[in-house]
Image (cartoon, one colour):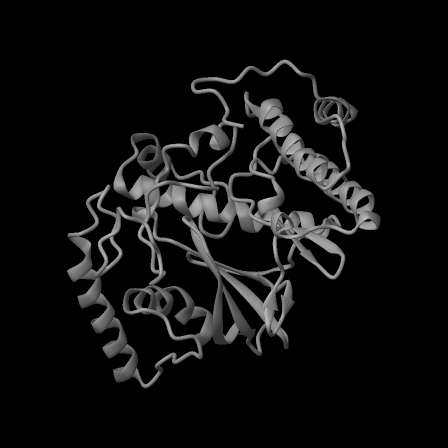
Length: 325
C-alpha cells in the first residue's frame, strides 16, 4: 500500500515538503511532535540503561528512527526472536524492512523485520476500499467481538484508529501464515508483535532480493515465472483472498524464484463489492510487467477465466470513488 503523508526517517530524502532538520512532513501537523519524540527517545534509552538491558544493534539509525526501532524491536530482542538489527533494506511510506540476525527462539540465519509506522503517522483515508467486507482483527489476529472496541472503530475515535491499524497489520500476518501453509511463494511468517512482523529474509547477507520491476528477465525465465505468479494468484483465490495491490513492485526475485509480499490490504472476493475490479487490476498489472519483458497475455480475459474458475460471478460494481489503476 502507498500513502501520501508520512514522517520519513531516511536522512537522504529529497522531499521538499519535509523540514531538513527532523524530516517532518509539513503537510500534516507533525512538527509539534518532534520535541515530544526527542524526550520520549531519551527517556526510553535511559530506562533501558537503568534496567541493564540496552539493545545495541549493528545498524546505526538516525535519532528518531532509533527511538522508533527500540520501541518496536526491543520486545523481539528480549524474547530472543532477533539477536541483532543489521541494516535497513527497504524504506516505505507505510513500513520499513530491516535485515536482522534471527534469535535463538526462532532459528539460525537471517530474518526480515517489517516495522509499521505508528498509526498516527499513517493516512488511512484509502483503506476503506480494502476493508469492506472484512472483519476487524485484534493484535493477535482474532476477530474483534468486543462491543466497545467495535464502537470505537465505527466512531473513528483515536482508540478506534489504533485498533484499525492493529487489524491492518494482523491481516498481513494471518494472510502470510495461511498462504505459506497452502504452499504459496511467500516469506515464512515467524512472529507478529505490536507493529512488527518478523518473517523469513529473502536474499543473503550482502543483498536483499530485488523486486521484479528492478529485474530484466532472461527469455527462458519469462513464461515459467509468469505462470508461477498466476499459480500464486490462484492459491490466493483458493484461500478466499485477493492481494489487492499486486504488481512487479511487491514481487521479489531471488535465484530464479519469486516471492509475493505486502498483504495488509488483502481483500475478500466474496464480501467486498469492489472485489472483481481489484482482482482484475492485480492481474492486469502483472500482465503489463511481463508484456514489457516480451511476454504478451490478455489480462482482461485471464482475469475473467481465473475468477469464474473459482465460482465467482462478475456482478460487483465499484462503490464510491473509482478504483485507481
